[in-house]
Length: 471
Image (cartoon, rainbow, N blue to C red; front, side, top):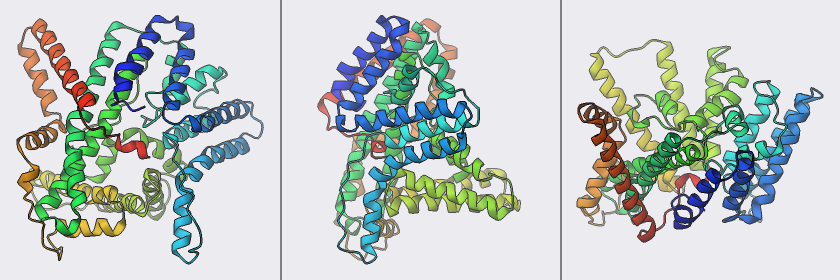
């Protein structure tokens, strides 16, 4: 059940949220668990056993580790157990394909179905186990509280990946307020509009251009596809995160922010502080620092960073394109660190340097997204050739302006604008000059309009699932 489906928007969401408000506080976690399991089972009931097994393993392991007997062995076995399901369902077919490619052609793929959210709830479980082992958080003795954390339906499919310590206070004593509920509803509407109005509209352009084939694209169309996809994936994932945060607020939780205007970045280093923030923090806390972090020789630090970005690429998908995408980002991250360590600086004015840094970052990101979007490595290379105007085949004759009609062009410009904090800052400055009562009415009408437009798209538009559901 996706957040942008009619059954969720008009059925599951109001029932789960209003039920949470109506029920007594001591039963809210039970209600949350039941709603979350129903939410998950709606699409993949055959994998409920896997989700509940992970919950049981992590719950028992946390208690055993806190008792202090063979805690390191328990940590190792429980983390291995968490990873076993992820490795089997997500990567086993990929490994079979690699082995078959290098000589063992009689091997057959199993065509395993990927359990929804497995990458996210696996990482939540591992973070809990590591935090208990490191004594950052006490083991949760209440099975209902722990289950609610692991199966929390706003987060289970695509995060944010919050640690148990962050959500534990709300799981044990969750107070609801009208202001928090109102703020959550508005955040949900904003996220829904990002998905339905921006991501889905741009997605149609992207899909059409990629279906044409790189050999049929002019360089203008190829660049339009790359830029549109950069914006699509941002508003798709940021939209989901906003909806998850909004639902969390309506239920009494405060989830972590996952995006901070990433396309304002002037380096790949800065980009990963702004993009999928909770995943970056997870890798830093549970992989990079345990490997040694910034300690040791420069070569060791570079190796640690390289491992993190390799794992980041692998986490996103079982394909060579994702692995390359991770290493591609890692290369520029290492290059930036190398130049920074040697304090190299262009002999240019600061505004010029700032501009060039921004152009460099956007260029690298657009090239990287080509590999992220492409179904195969060779297709990605062909698409890059099209972007450079080096495809040998003649373009199909489709003008870039045929994709940028008034509606699409308007959406593209608005998407670029709303990928920056400029609209938010303008509204804030305007609000300081107007009567507060007028501002409140105008804001409510604005969110009501967004809800009506988005709901109309949900009912009448072509359904498009969230990009990050495949991870």
